[in-house]
View (tube, helix red, strand yellow):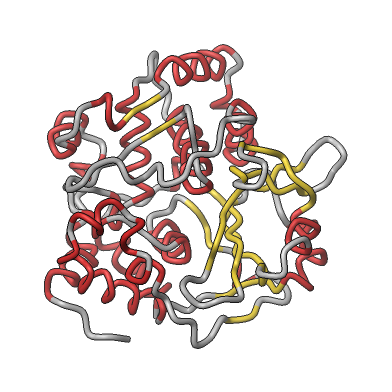
Amino acid sequence: MATLSRRTLLALSPLAFSPSLLYSQEQTAAKRQLPMSTIFKGEDRFQTIVKKAQSEDWKAIPIGKRIIKFAEELRGTPYESFTLEIDDHIESPSVNLDGVDCWTFFEACLGMARMVGSEKSTYTPADLLREIEFTRYRGGQCSGDYLERIHYLAEWFFENDARGTCEHLTSDLPGAERIHDRKISEMTTLWKYYRYLKNNPDLLGEMKEWEDYVAALPVYHIPKSKVAGIESKLQSGDVIGIATKYNGGFCSHVGLINRTSDGVARFMHASRDYKKVVVDDSISDYLNRYSKHAGILVGRPLEVSETITDESTYKANLKNLVG
């Protein structure tokens, strides 16, 4: 594994993980340093969805199916690129329910499902933002530094497995194969497309260090020729990373499994082609439509009760997962 700078190592260290900060509304809000109008869009829609979830007692539904309940509420939401890039300098947890890309679609569904899993009389945008912070950033917290964000989906699976939010199943599924010799370089190659990097090019050196870290991770995928054979093992709410055959990253897209009433494990995602959130073909048929897709990574969200907030446990888990 590549040698990391002291700053990068400090950011990576699970010792930076502070459970007392994760669920402290006052401290989290103070760290954000951006106005609510910037970091949360679609509050009316949020309130409508949450009221429906409460009236129909979605918290009693297993988390996978609960995720799909929220996903169905976002069905048809317009596709919008670069929804994570909200400021020139300050990184912050953010939500946009008026327009989503593939990443913000799945994490909003996961975040709302986790949020209502902790029973409260009322839920606020701050509640959802805390859930987003917990899954989007290394160690589960963001202090405003762009490099704290998990920028590559492959790393997201390792981080969230270590924190007990999503079990990374890929390597244990039949037919799994490790991806070797993958060059990870999208962020540093296409840096002018990313608002923070374009305005802070001094971050590129450390971003490259993170890319080297991601490149060394033991990433497995189910080759697309074998996906039909494991579709029966997939469940509604599973997070599906679409593995690419090309260098730049391990994954090029992400979505959810929605096992519909006909029993088909369909791919539900924010689609650039359809320009909205859709329930698509079966995951195997979807993969076969595109020559660039190599296969899938699979994560299964865990109930809120499985969340790990003990830093020593998180540290041990991450070390075991990344090798």
